Length: 229
Image (cartoon, rainbow, N blue to C red):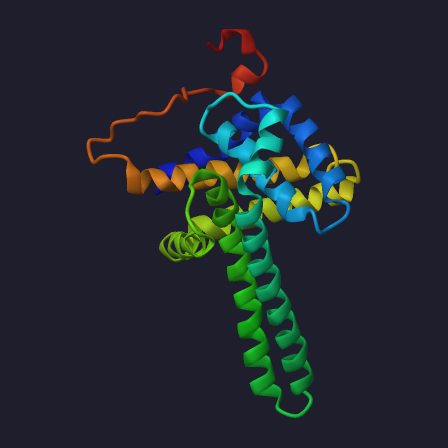
């Protein structure tokens, strides 16, 4: 795990850098197609089809955004519905327990605090569930169970990904144009890359045989890209 943590953000940077043009286009499509709000589940499935292929070092393009919507629309609807329902219930509970503090301060504080931690857990769950949606043809409940296992088994790693994702979101919102021209897509690449790296500890054989296509790249490749093969 320490090696994965050291490498994840470097790989995320290069995955984003290599497909920057595609990600900008996909991000704009995501924003435009999500404007009705009810279409958000569809756009999420399209976004993560693209970012999963980027994280897997496979060629991708805008066409995959639409194929992802077509292939995963119903599972994405169920997954987004489950997340929205749980978050709404938790927020209602938080507001209720905060009001309870006027009469039972300690009880209200403890219960509202517990609900806030559960909101954070749902956020951690989303890091894995949405990329898993585009990775495998399994039921929505199985995706959620797999996401729960990954969060609980890799808590510190998952919290790190969530904090970086929130930081990207904040910068994108504050910049104004960032949310339109790449912020959401960059978070998608982060989640997909993070999931792929964490899956290696469960899927790669104990001989440490590496079967993926990534190559070691240094920061100087940013300024001398012609040396990268």
